[in-house]
Length: 305
Image: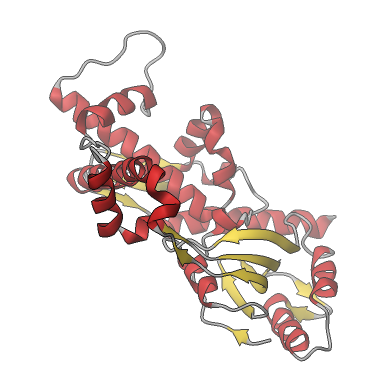
């Protein structure tokens, strides 16, 4: 085993890391400003809570900082598209109660403003697209991961959590301790997230932690590292390397893939345009504070138990 410590930022949503305070909207933080849209308005923690009351599909993402940031970007885009529609004189629907974050109106404006996408016209165009966009036809690496996570405020066997994780990493790497036993011990301290095997995870290129794990090899022990109020230790149980797909494997699916990539790029381009025009700023420090306060409250609750 090798010990790796160069990971700093975690894509918590994709690996399913959840904070105990899944509501992410503790009462004391209801006025906390999480995003600003220039001088026009702000998005508060209460706005986030109210939005998720009706957007049930987004609730799982609120369980971590990365997910909350993603939700806030969607909320900000909804508002800026609303501003844009009003500036263009596009009428809103009249039925129902008016809402600041009008998803239906925003979707209509998105369809009006987003660049159009068309699939390759014929087989020759599809082959040209395939040759010019190789990254669109690459299977990313996958890894079966085990993870141990602890609140940094916790103590285990009289040791601070990060120090304890470091000692366990040394013991596992030296063969004197089993990861399964460490995970079982960690579960007696932190019960709200699964310890140990996470199953197979796709190591996508667009998320920093997954890029870091993509560089790890089967048998590597990664960490311990701290992210916010938690410390993490990973073990790469198995690894499947990424590979470039051949034309024969994807020939029939190239038009559909080309459309998907185009829609993704169009969405990103429109979002960047709207965010720049309306000076959107997501406050990552405020998001961290939201979870720090929630984690502290949860720690107090666990201590009382």
